[in-house]
Image (cartoon, rainbow over all chains, first blue to last red; front, side, top):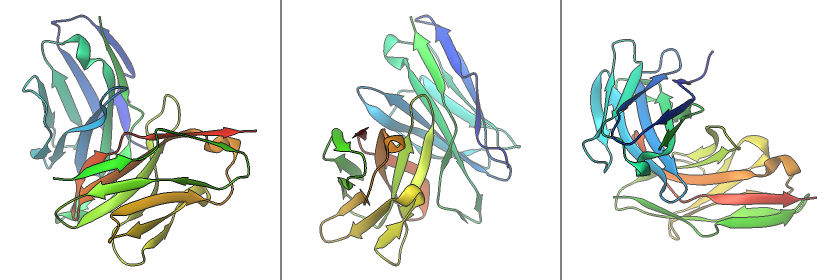
Length: 116
Length: 114
């Protein structure tokens, strides 16, 4: 079974631009979570989507948004990029049915975003 | 709300020596606990998890961890490390039954020396 895939793997943007990152979960997984990893703040939870609905949300400004499609693929968008948004963005998926599943998140390789 | 503290940012150890990476958590509700490993330029790989039951949990690559509720700890151990274990290790916590939101510690870099 293929793992979690994220595209693109690397991205360079300039301040003020917006960016969209994509995540395809493991086949059959319906929950997708996003995390930001930086040297200073470590790994921080952004949001989780399940069945196209946001289930959990972290403490990030409204410039960070996401969505999930009917095939469970997810995208996250960052508008008006700032230098501090430079980070590795990780996506993780889990199988959930009736609210329960493997209780384990499987991570993708991440998208490295650099904001100049 | 939950929080996780990894007490050591770096742990140097010689090959074939034992190692312990320490993790303490804080939570007002029942939790699940996880250890993940991250190799350079890669995502996170699950080493082991504690959901319920036996407090001693065995994972992949010879790692194990013990859940201690009274001390709110979940320390990771390996009796004999290899060069290939050099990586960053993250302890994480979630509310029981809500594993879509993981709270991570700051990470511990394990440096295995020959």
